[in-house]
Image (tube, rainbow, N blue to C red; front, side, top):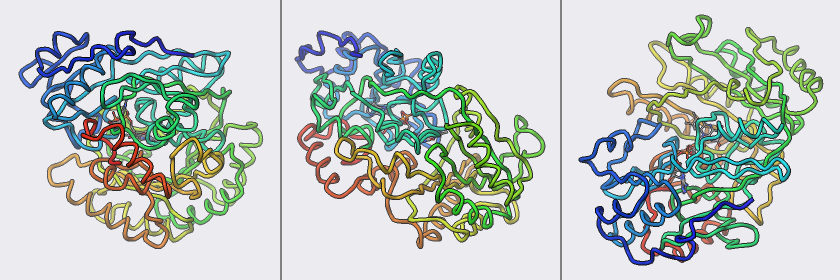
Length: 471
Ligand SMILES: Cc1cc2nc3c(=O)[nH]c(=O)nc-3n(C[C@H](O)[C@H](O)[C@H](O)COP(=O)(O)OP(=O)(O)OC[C@H]3O[C@@H](n4cnc5c(N)ncnc54)[C@H](O)[C@@H]3O)c2cc1C
């Protein structure tokens, strides 16, 4: 499926530079906002309220031509450009630069015969899931349908079908992209291959602005998923048993252990509100009887205090994690482990669960990857660290003044305490802010660090697209 490109942009026009905000405003179809305009304050918010953009100008692109104009303005004035779909994964705020919002580029078109979807750069996963499910198909979305599809894929993308079908990056068939010198081009296995490969897992906001992508869809309609809840103090036992359980689990199971401090908020049911649990969470996408039997083996050895695993249409997959939908401030860190055992559970429990007073972190977790992700095609993607099987991350929500320092310190303590198992390798989607930039290289394998640096140099010697990952 090909997207209809704006012919003017594809031809390279408008070729003359755009040097003033007035000119940008006159030529763009979507809103162009500066600090004096109504709407600027809202437009500069990110979903993750821990940071906010303070750009010189916001361009809310209505089409690919607006993206070209914004990039050319950023290049001609030297102020640089940052891209945002939802702000779930900001690296740097686009301070004093151009903030290009893609949220209006939200077209989604499913081709059931080809089992593909065209996904505009501003679309969240929700509409893709909804439209694909009508045809019994599923995209490789993550735990939260309100995350931006393109941003997720650029950073890798590990969702509930990862071990069976691979990462989001593996599912990308083509990208349309405005290069830092303002050209609109297509990158696929057949065109601009090096760029195509770099976008499949190399991170966003550096090599250009993706205007849309074509992804593969997979035949998934009904899954078996949910949560087994255990008392917080069983974290070591649960992690130990989990490590042995997943060691030979079929690829149809993608799962994790979450050490969760449920917030004391009224919309949570009373039995979990404000309480801490160790949770075995996951999704089975194969034969349902087989999935139930696999879970039964875990239940038999370790009976949970609550069991929420059930059969569900894949359209309801978001209920497995029940991630917060409303914007909040979040600080996080994470990485790849070389293996897990009960000790990892003990370490995480000691630093996640509250001792006296309210907890600093909302959760820490270990997600089982491997499977189709480890078999993914390294020749056509740059997503690194496929040989490691477990990715961890921890997150805190600084709701009150002064909490951020405590949370940051605690995240550092977790990293240190996991040193025996942490490989020092990074997974971009589970890093934000400066850390996403500082550790971009840790998310790539071997020669790809240098290859992407060369590509960045070639495409963007003046670092026009500069607030995302750092190549
Ligand atoms: C509640 C929640 C649940 C999550 N669940 C998962 C999960 O299950 N699995 C997983 O892998 N990740 C998960 N993530 C992480 C998420 O995938 C990353 O934060 C991702 O980067 C978010 O993409 P976005 O477009 O929504 O965010 P944004 O902050 O808008 O973008 C993220 C980065 O991509 C760049 N970018 C966005 N659009 C473009 C574009 N069109 N062209 C070029 N660059 C672009 C931005 O510049 C930025 O650097 C989750 C995050 C949250 C907050």
